[in-house]
Amino acid sequence: MTTIPGAWSNQVWWPQNEQPQERWTLPEFSAPALQLSYQSYQSYAYLPVPLHEQHASLGHSYPLAHVADGYPAPAPYVEPPYQLLPQAAEPPIAAEVTDAVEVEAEVEVEVEELPLPADRLVPEARPVKVSVDNNRCHIYGICQQEAPEVFRISEGGSLHYTGTVPAHLAARARQAARCCPMQAVAISGATPPGARRRRRAAAVRPTGYRRIVVAGGGLAGLSAASRLRERGYDGELVLVGEELRRPYSRPPLSKQFLAGELGAEDLTFRADDTLQAHWLLGTQLLGLDTERKSVELRGGERLPYDGLVIATGVDAKRLPSTPVISDRIRTVRTLADAAAIQQAMQQARAHHLVILGGGFVGCELACTARDLGMEVTLIVHSAPLLRRVLGSKLGEVVGRIQARAGVDVRLSTRISHWHDTGAGLRLRLDDGELLEADFVVLGLGSVPRTEWLRGSTLEVTDGVLCDATCHALDVAGRPMPGIVAAGDVASWPNARFDATPRRVEHLIHAVEMGQHAADALLEGPDQAPRFTPVPRFWSEQHGTRLQAVGMPALGERMEIVEGSLRSESFVATYHRDTARGSQLVAAVAFDMPSQLLDYRDAIGRIGPLPRTLTSRRRRR
Image (cartoon, rainbow, N blue to C red; front, side, top):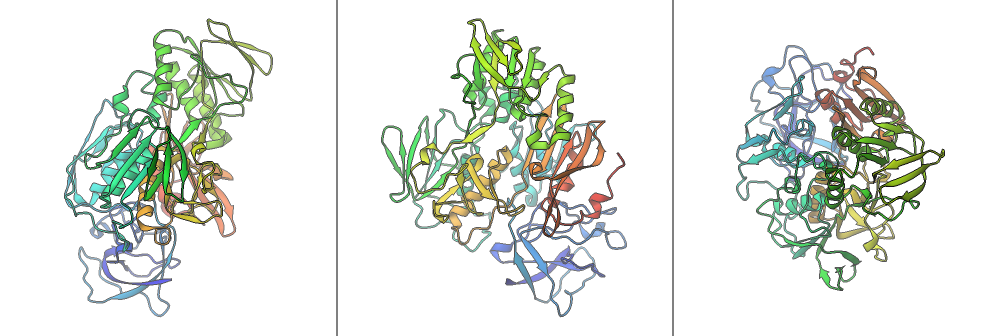
């Protein structure tokens, strides 16, 4: 328990486990670790309960002048990282609700430290300009999730945004731009040096870190490197990537890139000009020596480091029975993979495409191939599609959408024999049927890229095993100072849900975990907060937009809370039972992007949902 002095601001505070009788104010702390940004989705100290003329909606803030007579109805709820524990003696000082409340008093509020939110964005000093490339934008709605005060998708499906964003929302707008898979959002207007405030008492520039090596040339590594510079680190920064290209967006590989809508340069992430990093591209990592603090590169060269970020990502998975990947059998993990598939399509060599795997990659690739007029067979070992991600009910909805678009979906089916005829591939299914295919794409999932860490002191069970702060663990389970991991390769316990280490493979996660890993590296395992994000991902299935927050795979039961399965436009929530009650672990929306917003900040909540959510439920 820690006691932190504070002063009242003009925000309303609802204390945990109490129904207030008066309008109380929210303390705004000055301690670096607990600075409050009430404009953000998740503040550094609290998630303020927002106020609206009609209802309260978690995740938004409004001026107090908008409060109607009477107190809003939802049950009190304070999001991590801190749970408010009201003083037992008497309640906090009550104040009149005005545009500015000044109370000459200091109070002490006890807080119980809980997991910090994923982002600790600091308000910037100046407004910024926002622009959106309509040719790139596919209305996935990620920008609206990250910055709903700036971006909004109308019921008709068009994107509206604020051209000039005030300083207090600038950091949120930048985060939305980073998370856009299409790189459609551009932010202009730089924050002057020194404008960003320190958020924690820990030093921003540790004297021991003369060189930080980022192992991995993907988005998580780029995000970590950018965050290090943002935090004031001015030492040497080296990024090592096995591909010859700088970090690029992978989600469009199976969609817009294959369709010819985007080229290779369009996918490349815009690196900050102030990054000032050394890039070692086309360089393979062979080993790690934690005692000598060096990584071994192909050719025998050793690269010393003082701090290390491991962000090597994943490789595409292959079945043991699958023949060596040839010109007609491909994965779609890298730009080179996608370029080979695209070339085959453009040369009319692939009239019939067989896709092995019913995950997002397989389903999205089927959409692209059908749009190009190809015959598509989707072979899935299990049933239905996306079952491991969304469960059976929603997987069946995706299956109907695919079948309606002309995809031949084969559930609970395996390929028992492969034969290259010279003109194509002949596949024998486990039921004896023969399929003639021009091209086969494997979408069977992924495996973490940790071969180069074998023999090191790090624990590499299903990826780089980390503690809750993103610090890599050694084989004895101890956090390694100076070594963190981020992105697809990192397995860590998200305390928002439980203590089980898991890997998360989504674009937004790579951005957030890269940022947090950089913070943790600078702050050390004893000072760094726990990484407790709400995972967010999206997909598009033949025009139906799917968005999700949380971890649906953890759900034990699913409930349709808005819309209906029959209409294929709905919001579904996923719950599981814990010792303390029912926990909301995820929410998924089909063609309801705006309706999903308010569920994000309730993910991980145990007990009844806020009334603002339950009151919106419609009859199925």
